Image 1 (cartoon, rainbow over the protein chains, first blue to last red):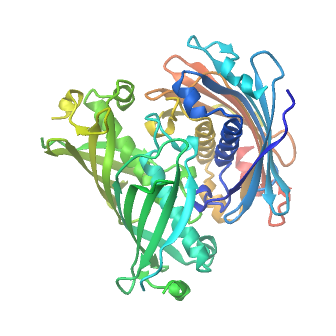
Image 2 (spheres, rainbow over the protein chains, first blue to last red):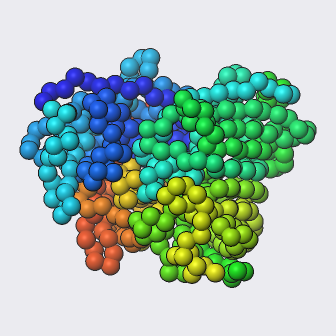
Length: 131
Length: 131
Length: 131
Length: 131
């Protein structure tokens, strides 16, 4: 799989900023997650429905490189590029770029897998729509 | 002041849902705050800039009536209707309605004031754009 | 029911503060909720287990009076006093007081009920431990 | 610098859990940040005061390896081991272990620096207490 890049426009909300006046580090993971879930929806997969059906997708590793800080009032784009480098792993390469200038704010590489009832990694049929 | 109603379209993000699978109670205050700040922006006032200039607006009372629960995937509209019932108080009447059906999910009445350096309520000139 | 007052000690975490350098308004609802859930635990009731068993407790109304703002570094106490004023309603009167001075920071009155599968209010047997 | 390991006891709060019934991925960054700030406090450094003095510490890279998921009711320990591998960088090696069993839930390596007014990395005198 070498998917096209999915992209989502977002805007910083004031409550996401901390006492430094910039978006708190943890909030970027919220942005990245939401973009991944919207990407899944664009492929016909709802994270909430998958969870309801017992398909539990978990993150096993997150690497985030913070380049510049988003601030109150900023608009930005979150991209998602998915790949499937091994039998049970999905990798999402993601970027956050401030708009309209496209400055790179953050790069991330998120590794996920699904786990079955015994917490063992597997690749559920439901995710084949991503391939 | 009897302002027209300001309205903002939003969408539930999965990370805003809790173990009941519905939007957590506290998150509605985030939605309401963000709609108020976007309302201020529509009047030429940035909450972040006001804060930077030392104009500190605080909430003194929040009343929230929860009617129905937003869920993953829901789109909704948050409205803001501002009034200025006393010399130092602003009141924001707000509703959250699920779209496209316009079902009422939450009603709120938020009372705010500005506080000066000695933590005393006052009505700063900067907010006169709201009147 | 006129329960004794339950009390929980907490401490402000820096990420709970916003660009004003004070605890964000919505975060107080997190504090209040967590104190209620710890109160339930003190009565032998786990919110997570209740949810897992299909006992869905929802907030129907929240009234919050913000007196003073908690800041980074503050320790505080959250109290819970539960009452059962009608057949299907639970009311939690709560206070947040900064420690060690016991200054009142916030007063709240939270009304809750349980809802059955058809979203109708009822009073589940499981909650009788609160009476 | 090869500091001793700092350790902080915490407990999962129900609102930190998402629709999967487990702690949301982004929340672990909150836990890690709070443990780092408590570590700074243990060395006489307040993150809030540093921010107020214009000493802006930023994360430049976060690597998180998620091993097992924390759930409602879990108690856990967050550790911090700081090192200073280059002139302007601080590295925090952190672990989250469920208690009382000490099972490893998450390992992280967080790289930070301070930035001056022109957004250039530097090592402020104030942080020398960490060395």
